[in-house]
Amino acid sequence: MKEEKCGYSVAALVLGIISLIMVVSCCFTVFSFIPAIAGIVCAMIAKSRTIRFEDIALGGFICSIISLVLFLLLLIFGILFYQYANNGNMNSMINQYYDDSYGDDFQNRFPFSPEEEEDDVI
Image (tube, rainbow, N blue to C red; front, side):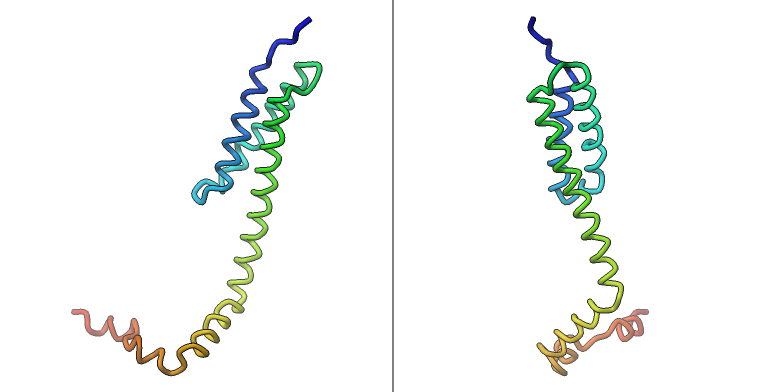
């Protein structure tokens, strides 16, 4: 007896591919976990409705897991970078770089400060 294809398998694959595209794009990385979790749920439903894991559902499951792991890694990296940048280490590194590169000449290249520009505005 031939098994019928489950629509959840196709949905799992489509959601897995969408979540992978979203996690590698700059704009939609924040929301990529939503289709990833939905793809995992669809793959599990497809598995429960058939005797074996269909290839399509397995592909969707793997894509969703990969995008969820990438999302979590990017989230952890973003939190660590934010803490590092706000700790003052980043500012001191940038100031040290400009001092080493330009020295006192930096003020001569950019002679106006924001305070001086505000005084000139009427």
